[in-house]
Amino acid sequence: MPAIYLSGPITGTTARADNWRAEVRRKLPSSYKFFDPTKQDPDRTVGYLRSLSPVEDLNRLRHGKFIADRNRHYIRRNDVLLCNLLRAGQRVSIGSVGEIHWANAFNVPIIIVWERTGNVHDHAILNALASELCFSIDEACQILLGMFGVSKKNLRYK
Image 1: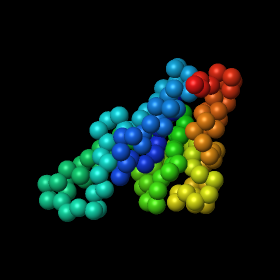
Image 2: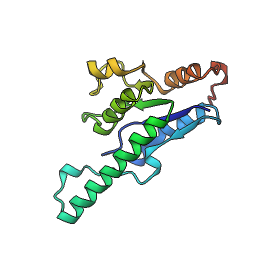
Image 3: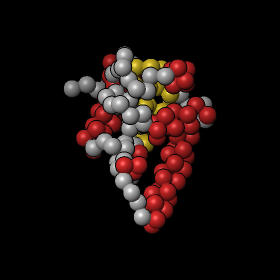
Image 4: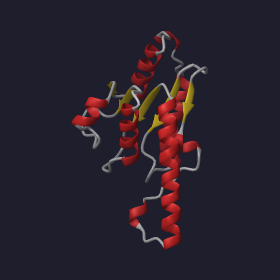
């Protein structure tokens, strides 16, 4: 059973922005396992935009350290990293870029989904690290099915 890490922007987003993760789960076989970092108390605040007390600053540091350690651990244990950067806006997702680099360091295949043009993440380094570049969630799901030996006819679409 393949294990897929679902990477994508969290900071500055709403829970509604995570709908793509449920869409991926619906479209792939139920035997696939997923790690979704938004399922465990995501911090969506944009920290640099506000002034923090020393206690808040320390708590933010601890939270960041925990998230980095946890995500790095799960990326190493997963079979593929799927990073959805569609509609990312004008700010680069530092966490997503870091996760892509961890996956590369651990030889975990990387599928990046973004617009054909105009995505703020479109960079030569990320292009070089990606095993596959896709322009839709459907395309990424088809690639995942192909990677794990499932025919496209088994893709669950409504």
